[in-house]
Image 1 (cartoon, one colour):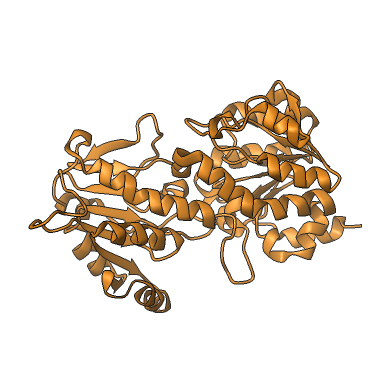
Image 2: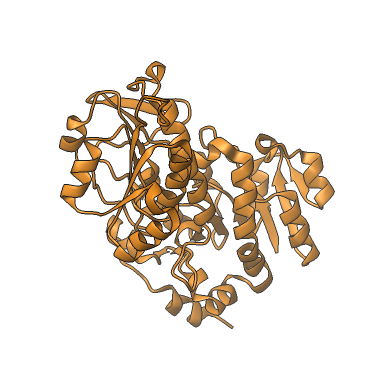
Length: 375
């Protein structure tokens, strides 16, 4: 199969879909790879590095999309890229369609096959292609939150670790999944006062086992969230419903009760955010202030540590790219129903139930399409 790796054009997005070692693996398995000029420069990978791996460098995205059968990206398509898609072309990237009706319609109209990293599942019920970026975003959330608490950024001037004779900052983490666990790990390392809320008693028990008395766990209710949020210096929104819009768990009335200069970091912003006052931001202007509270809502947080994120992402996506290229998408999906869960749009139809529900489309079962076309 002919695989294409475009240069990302989202604001301050430096990650790249495939690294040279991944390309060597694909070429070793009989495939060809096109890489857009300077696609990897943001993570320290030169065109010469890609050429040494066996990739062919192309000058423009137009040339790449016109030739490649499978496009491997990191972030969702930007408006200038919609017109480049061809009927039957496979797109493999983070899409987050439930909060992006424009992109969804463009993918439908293009007659392409769009696979979202974030809805691919595993036999254990995990999201294996989202997990490494969730790890990165969770760890980054404390880092950026600490920075936003500085007075120069509009924060209250609290040092999360505290110092001798001065109590540490209070951090509330809403959601005990991968993001929340990694946020807690860094927050505890700083010596902060950490509370994690989740609706799963089983997960809270696991977190108690992991962190012991270094953190506090609470069952997530409206009252528990309100009590913790209004008393926090930093709140991390780490709630996820796979493929669907994130629930708004922190109301504006709660936010108004917080101490001026406190900080909200909404890691769920890719799926619409879990704070009522959240709106997407970019690395150019990562924060804004509502009711005296600093909001950090960058939609591609892992892009801030692009080199680490790129290699972590390649570790988990490469087996799926190989399956698509070697088997074709039909066999790859029929052989692995968990991979099939990543199929969001298929030849003009919405094939992800959560996306169809949130955006008002008719859901089409992908298995019926694939079996009827499989030969």
